[in-house]
Each structure stands twice: as C-alpha cells, then as structure tokens.
Image 1 (cartoon, rainbow, N blue to C red):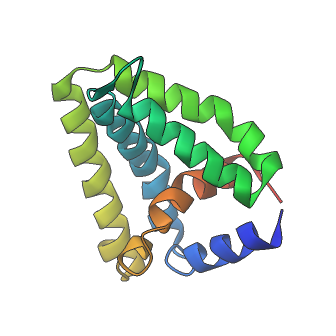
Image 2 (cartoon, rainbow, N blue to C red; image 1 turned 135 degrees about the vertical axis):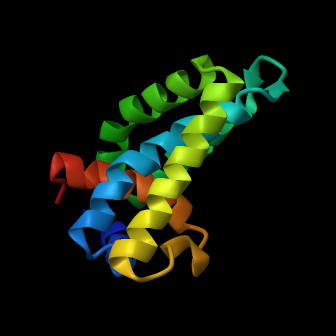
Length: 139
C-alpha cells in the first residue's frame, strides 16, 4: 500500500473504530455509491452520462493513490455504476435513504463521532475504497 493511501486510511479509520459502525458501512457505502452513480447517470453528457464520468474521475483518484488496489477496484466500481444506472428513480432514492440512515446509525449510535467527511470531503471517496480494502484484506 502506498504511503499516501495509508495516511488517508489512517485518518478515515479514526472515525470508524467501532466494529458495529464499520458493519453499517459495509451496507451503507455500497448503497450510497450505487445510487449516487445511478442518479448522476440520469444526466446525459453526449455519448456518456455524469454517473459514468464521476466513476471515471473516482477511478483516476484511486489510481493516483495506489495503482494496485485501484486496478482491483475497477470491477466493483463498474458493478456499482451498472446497478445504479439500471435502477428506477424510486429504487435509487430508497437506496440513498437506507444508505444514509445506516451510516448515521453507525456514527451516532455506535461510534459516537460525526462522519469523517464532515471534516474532509475527500472521505466521501475514501469510504468506498476503504471498505473494499477491508473486504479483500488489502495491505
């Protein structure tokens, strides 16, 4: 793992120490990511859509941080995009609501700390790859 990614993970982990908070993120983050990409996919930009563009920008950011994990993360990001872009507006909104409620339960019931992105918006991008790194035991 690159030093840059390790620093970002360490900072993010300060807000995610409680195991039950981390567990809520395993559900909440994929729901939020897929639905966000899906909602943005409704905005057409010629031959592509804004959801696809956001996914590409996120992947560029991940490749900047650590090429190895980013290459592993391409398929999950593509799946999140596909799920979001294939879902109806009602499903996308439901995913957002459930995802955010789950996140806030984790932070305020278990962690007793505000979400990391309140202090650093970059954590909105760190969350998905941090969860992925935990799932695959990336070091």
